[in-house]
Amino acid sequence: MSDDPRGPVLTIGRLAATAGVTVRTVRHYHQIGLLPEPERDASGYRRYGAQAAVDLIRIRTLADAGVPLARIDALLHARPDEFAAAVSDIDAEIGRRIDQLTESRRRIGELASGESLVLPPEVVAILHRMRGFGISELRVRLERDSWILLQAMNPGAVPQRIVDKNAALDDPETIRLHLACDAAIDWAPDDPRLDRLIDEMDAWEIRREQDYSRPQNRALISAHISEVSPAWQRLLGALAHRAERRRTAG
Image (cartoon, rainbow, N blue to C red; front, side, top):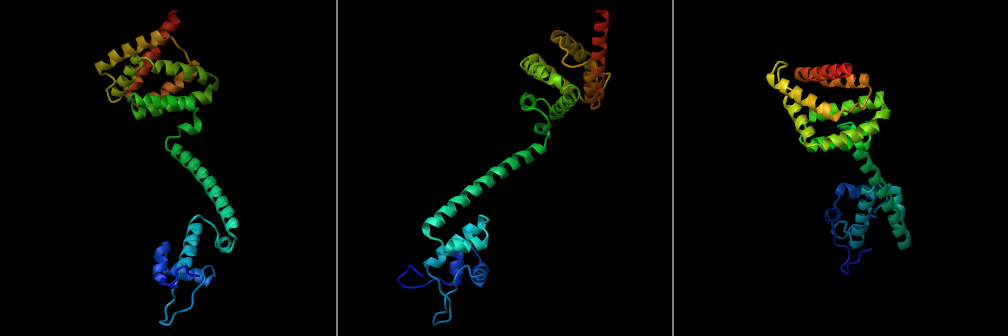
């Protein structure tokens, strides 16, 4: 029924535009009995009143929310309190779907780096800290891989390694050497600048005096990193050789 005292005044085109659907959609709702189809007027046109517009907007809104058409038909004939309760249930279901999609979106985002899928949050936070210091993404990825190897080979060493790594990142000299190693990635192995960097790194290692994992674990991790750059290969090889000399001399 129309709420307009002048009677039905909307053409099917105006009705469809009011609800944001197509004329074809309105006719489909007529065919399945979801929206009553008015009789033609004296001029041969079907005209709709305000109630038809309200019903059509309800149908479109519920359909957009994923409510099956059969349920929409029942809701259109429900009492006001039943309709309100059903809308509340639909809103709660949409909320649950939003939560599920938000979680799925978060996990999809994690797939890009793979960090959060396999590493503890504390380790992921360390990787983010390194990025914040301007350390290259390549070096961060290698750091990530070293954590994955350490976790696979010696998971018991991970908690202490987290403590040690965070302490190292609190040291400006550590950050400076990280950035210096980034700069050295494309150097030739015989570049004289590499000799100075080896000396600096060796002095840093001596000051740290840490052995956060078993020797074979550390060797595997170093081998993985050195594959990336001949300069890094020489750097790590020289540091390992010096460390071994100190160990045997002691």
